[in-house]
Image (cartoon, rainbow, N blue to C red):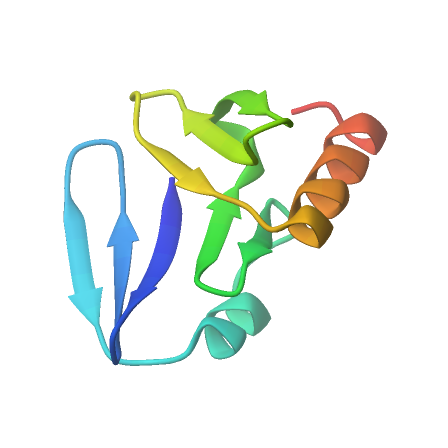
Length: 87
């Protein structure tokens, strides 16, 4: 679903589990495909699993009910990507 940076660790959140590991978001982005975008400086989201987007509150909700925040620039980038390639 998404990857988040918590202190000095990364947390990969899937539909049923989460995994913690060391690394950087920028390194993860280089290894992921075009379905993953930086929504905020602390979050990488998988566009395929987005269920809804609250533009006003800059909140992204996923298919399992989990949610994360987005920056204004990140939200713009996500909306543009979804518009160009409906997932």
